[in-house]
Image (cartoon, rainbow, N blue to C red; front, side, top):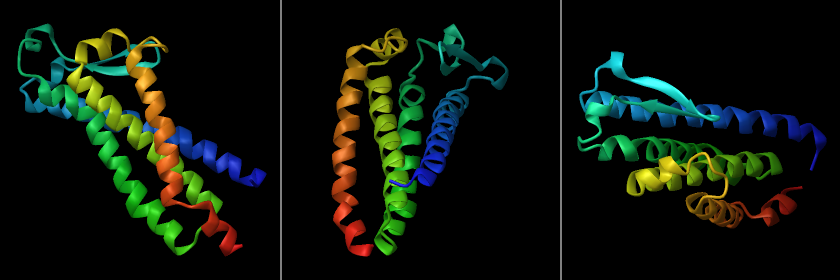
Length: 166
């Protein structure tokens, strides 16, 4: 792979992480507003390097299903839309290694967010308690999902198309 391609890939990766975080936490904030939490009582805290939207304790006994599920699902669906509407279509028109790699980054971010959204919604307490640990069981499942998403991506973006094009 061309050395000139690495800098845009790295910049896209970090940009995608920042945008993913904003969408994820923004969805939590919007769902908190929908559930009736006043804007003045929504705070943003950091658990290590992980930012989090925090709502007051008095809302904890409410039905927070929307609040728990919203972050990862919204970010995952947003990145899947970019994956299929931008990178997949670009690759179909002009297969290139850069389109494939940018699509791969987008797809991996999307699948990780969908998995995190599911875990955060379905197993919220385990997700929050173990969010700071690198070796928690939920992260181990996400690592497997990342590997699976790489295989899925390369079945949708076959390298043979790139070789034919050059």
